[in-house]
Structure formats: structure tokens, C-alpha cells
Length: 131
Image (cartoon, rainbow, N blue to C red; front, side):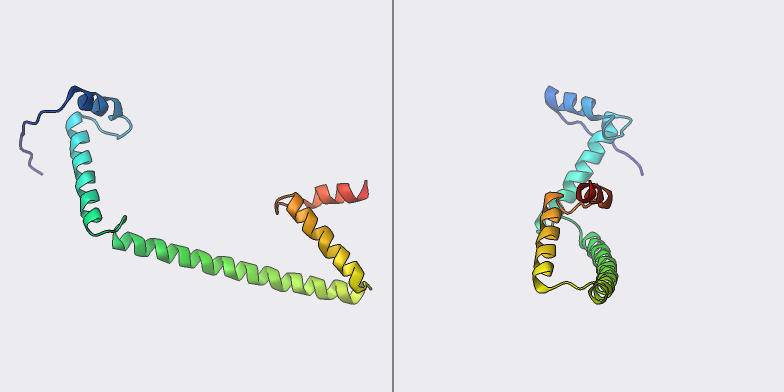
């Protein structure tokens, strides 16, 4: 792309800001830095005029990725729920608990989950219960 020379006056502190940020911006020259900065700011202004923060095609891509992630998470949670229901059925048929025992068990489990902030470690619980 052909370039044309222009003459602009910049305050000394702006020139110092450019110099100190050349490496962070991955620019080889001040001209490249200024060009990138102007392009970025012009794109920002055009987005601001359309009252959106990100372009529509980027928003659509993000929405699609989030939807796929939600579907995968839902499938995993459903499978875990089925496995937990199977385990509960098996334990219910094998063990003989009365309603009071179930309430105590539920409260104990709730307290442990809250104590560990939902990050249960079976080994720690086993050691805590059987030592």
C-alpha cells in the first residue's frame, strides 16, 4: 500500500508514550505504532456510532460458542444426574434407612459440601470420617 508523508505536531509526552509502548504494541517504528493506533481508534468510533461494543459477526461467533458450550454442559449434567439416580436407587434398594436417617444424611452431606465450598475430596472425607 503506497504511503504518503504527513506532518503532525504531537506533545512531547505523547511521543514518550509512543516510545515506551512500542514493544508492547509489537511495532518496529513510531509510524507503525501511530498507524495502528489510528486504525484502532477509528474502528472504535465506528462501533460506538452503531452503539455496539463488538462487531455483529464477532458477537454471533461468541453466541454460537456459548450455545455449544451450554449444550455440552447440559448433556454432561444430564448423564451425571442419571448416574446419580441409578446409584441412589441401588443404595435405596440395598440399605434400609428410615426417613429420619435420610434427613440426617442429607444435612450431613449439605454441611460437608458447604464446608469444602463444593470442592469435595473423597480422600479427605474418608480420613475425616474414619480416623
